Length: 399
Image (cartoon, rainbow, N blue to C red; front, side):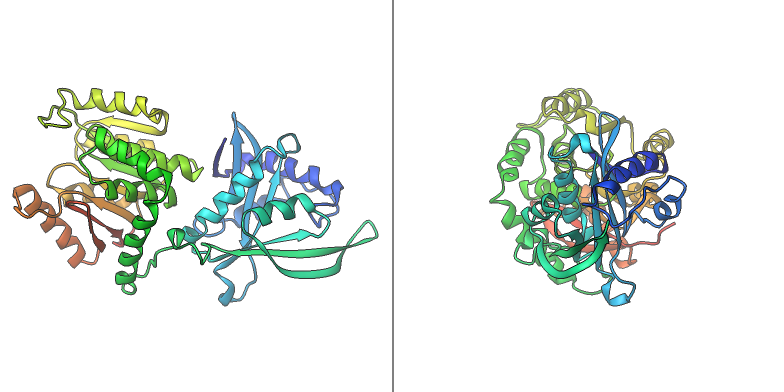
């Protein structure tokens, strides 16, 4: 099962799932079924950036959906959204609703939301239990406010903060261009400390030892950014797959359908631990061994060649990039210039070869390129991690 943005072709399945719930008088306050035509305007009100509409798809079939909508029209409530979850009756009690709700909680910070609210009838015990299981609390109770076939029904307001204020690992970073940069850097370091107690830490340690020259902390950040980012991932310089695999694990654990596009020209490298006579062949083998090949589009070529740029644009279509992993040669600005029109505002940036005690030509040029983009106001730095990797965000002009 995957969770993805709904498209208009999904509307008949969405309406069908909804209409089945109407006569049950358990889920919706609507008393009559709706139609696809009547739901067109509702569908267009959703925004992938703030109030999305998602579907859960299994084997090409829509089996459930979740939507976000404005809680109240006043500006002070813009960080709170009301959510609704509906599941095909054949797939209930199979974890579909839970997966959708978990994804809503995980993605809320990247949508600019700090709280989620569900309005549930008091007699809808399965939904109440699901929300309670995922950390929602009763924030309100409206007795006998609904009339369903002559029966007065209570309405329960279930809510939770996103992220949980007791769990800083999922606390959103401030996307302000000028403020809280220092606190955001601190939060990233604290996040790394928390991940040391998570199973993914030991999993990525093995990946680092087998497939990567990047520091373990950098692989963890790649995993985290791939998990929370709201758009796709572009990697320039995959080498034999360490960062690629970390990103794939993050996308898998996010439960959303995100594209990972990895560019690698190939060649050979002499290295005491990760030497290879055929980079691209070993990259393909390593992705297959970790069972992530199907998540990744590999492009063999130089990142700045027109054929490679066209291949990336074809793979992305109209979609944007929410995470850039840049670990190729020294020309960092050249690669950023090639693809910056595809970056989201706030796109996470992981750029290797920024620092070294004995700075060589590659590091000198890489750092000069990055520093120039920072000085121009296009990049927001959040520190460097591991041995030499710069981490920050893209805040440059958007096309």
